[in-house]
Image (cartoon, rainbow, N blue to C red; front, top):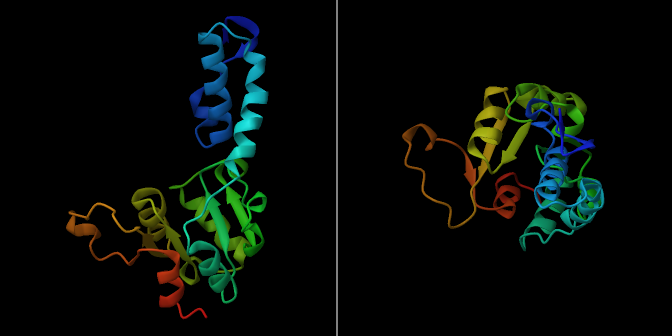
Length: 183
């Protein structure tokens, strides 16, 4: 399908749902077209966004906690997002990464969790997945056979649903490193 010019093709949502980069590029293109601007500017605009995307400011405890965790366990980044862990200041602490964009499937699909396990050389029951999203991380990883911790930072809304009260939770990565005996 073409919109407003022969060079601006709108991609079907089903083809890019797992790819935040494609979604952002497409959103920028659509905004440019809607504003009457040249949609070819979208790539440069996305490039500026993507560079800034990797200039992260971590919570104060994250760097030290990840160092502690990485000294005892291989860490794998598993993301539906488009950040490249290797481009961040803490990327060296991770033994690998899987993005939904590259894998072609995102969380909560169990295949992305199983691929992480395969890359780690572990069975799902040997892997701990820590995530902040109840549905996409915690419940999906648990359903895929992994152990889970739900990262719920201080100030998160209390969980009213009794089905979720028994989930293992931590308030920060330092607390996780402490609970796992990482020095």
